[in-house]
Amino acid sequence: MLANLYLVVDSIKYKLRFFFDCGSGICVWAENEIAQKKYGYPVANDMLPISKALANELDSLVIEYDDSIDWEYPPNPSPWTEEQIIDFSNRVNVAYIELCKELGPNYEVKKEFDDCI
Image (tube, rainbow, N blue to C red; front, side, top):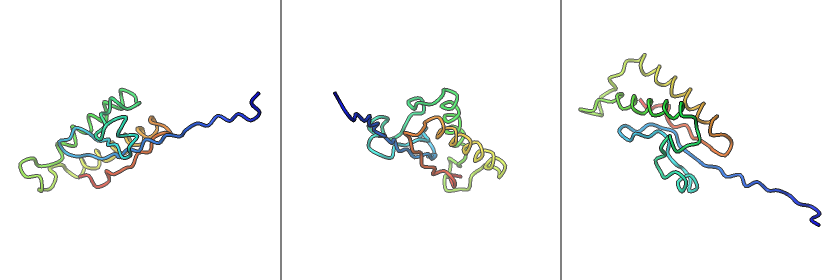
């Protein structure tokens, strides 16, 4: 008979980074080894345990972000208006919050997009 049996739940933390990189097609990146082993370094949104709606929203934001730079001369200022920048930033913040919520407690997502435009 086992007198004191304890169930130990191993708390795996997948550490991810959330930022935009023009032309990459990605906004989620693996930060630690266990996340990299599971997803690779750039993380495809459809590989994450999130809703299809959120994966689609993240994909849309990545595509939209690519329009935020002048591809003829990338060091130029963004062609976006201040209103477009604010709108995009607001939608990114909402998506980030939803991403953290849907991923749950076994994931840590570092927000690195504040000055992305």
